[in-house]
Length: 166
Image 1 (cartoon, one colour):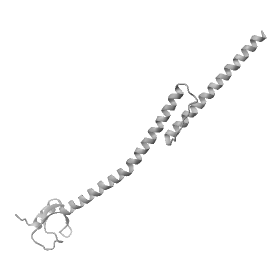
Image 2 (spheres, rainbow, N blue to C red; image 1 turned 30 degrees about the vertical axis):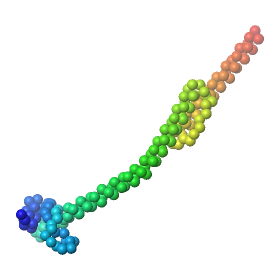
Image 3 (cartoon, one colour; image 1 turned 180 degrees about the vertical axis):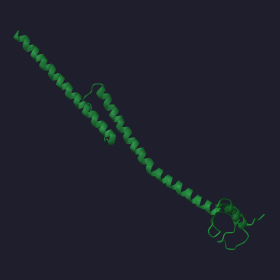
Image 4 (cartoon, rainbow, N blue to C red; image 1 turned 45 degrees about the vertical axis):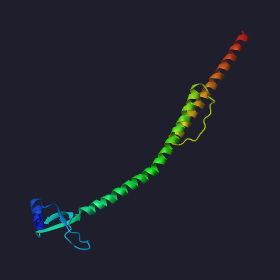
């Protein structure tokens, strides 16, 4: 059942001033323009000053073919980004986790009283700042303990001198 396409176009634009119409139409690039028709969607607009109907349309199978190409491009790009970013993220995670493990072991030794514990390894970014802060804190603690020990020895020397003087 064929409908009068121009009448359909006219009805659509008279109702709202513009709109879309889906219909079947032969493709102009076919070798022989036979009766094979393909779904096509057109946008129509009534140009009121002249009373003309302006329109443009695309074959739906052409749109679907472009969408397939676009899907392949998006998936390919996503996989490429994933293959480039994932190893870098895993490496960064490994380096950071390893650095934190070394720092945690060092902090455990210091908290157990080993102020001469060593810390080795390469630290980057925030892990480097944390390592520097911990080692500076241990150095300050060692200085404070040395000062307290010197003060204790001085107090003992003064007490012995006072005892001898009496």
